[in-house]
Length: 288
Ligand SMILES: NC(=O)c1ccc[n+]([C@@H]2O[C@H](COP(=O)([O-])OP(=O)(O)OC[C@H]3O[C@@H](n4cnc5c(N)ncnc54)[C@H](OP(=O)(O)O)[C@@H]3O)[C@@H](O)[C@H]2O)c1
Image (cartoon, rainbow, N blue to C red):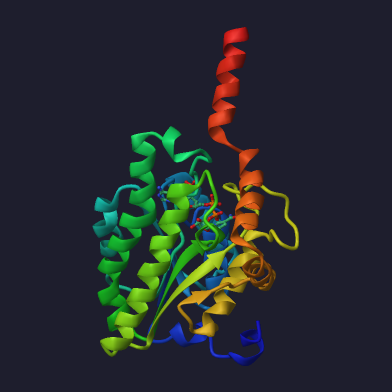
């Protein structure tokens, strides 16, 4: 918590050279869209990545109106298809890319026991959460090394810190992302690239399409979350909890027995189980 008062140097150090650019994946909605807005506000040109060309065009129009002095480009590539990564690299290669935010995750993940998941769901989860992010980072790292100081943020989740029932592949994806971040950060230091800042941002509840909870103190809007994330870059640690209320909650949860935390998260997710909703629908169909 205290780092918020002590650490000062932040996102502005990645604003250097001619026309610095940031790339945000999964940016047609939610936290990703807000990150584009906040980064544009802080002076960066932004690549807006997503899979839906219509939604992306609307986001680009909105951002261009709000930030007329910035440049925006759309990159369309389905993150469940890692073989499309070269298209992202080609779109960014002639720009001064200094920031990559791996925000796209398996956000549409069904809430269900692993045993009821389909093979294609499991494959999709790993393609988006693990393969896409790893391939994209690998492919863009040479650009980030050339353009140092540069920043890489991987967007994680509370589900990794306290893995709950019914979200096994999602929680495991974020666990991979955290370890990947820590190892890559260590590698950058050991190979004399300490000015490539690599961070994992632990996000808790945020009111978005994939988490349609009402906005509250503990479940902020994506805009509040994005601002907290951009500000938190200054912490300069592998794992950061950007939003102060989430950090407070994390401290409280660390003090509780893990079995109690699992029971609490499990009880909440139990009510949202997709396999039970499917069964209800099937039973209702039989009655009709
Ligand atoms: N919201 C939360 O409570 C919460 C909590 C913890 C962690 N997080 C993490 O925060 C990040 C953003 O989540 P969010 O809540 O902002 O999600 P969101 O509002 O559902 O937005 C997800 C974004 O990712 C895009 N996307 C999804 N699948 C994609 C694919 N296969 N290819 C390309 N783009 C794809 C979506 O595109 P479309 O517009 O086409 O759907 C959308 O732009 C994720 O990594 C998530 O795991 C969120």
